[in-house]
Length: 134
Image (tube, rainbow, N blue to C red; front, side, top):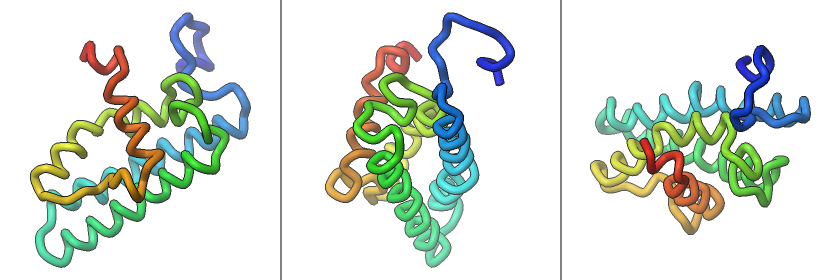
């Protein structure tokens, strides 16, 4: 909305092409509506419910891996292409919590062997100058 309402010198959060913009909106909503609730469910639940949340989270991370592999961002540094975009911000915001959750419950949610593109994305995003300043 901001990019559409005001011209700024800030980086574009959304791709220029309408199809790619729609994909960015889809994946941002996916992270908010599917991935994060399943990840937070791991902390919220115990026993069978927790295992269900782990399975859902792993499946959701696999879908993000597939998006990195097959969508218009394939071969790019970020979901937003060569620069950080909306999906990167939506997913990157809780990134530190996801890493800490893996340590707390002693499980690997983003396995570098099974999810190599997402693992590389996580490392790259974590090392951005913008994130380091926060």
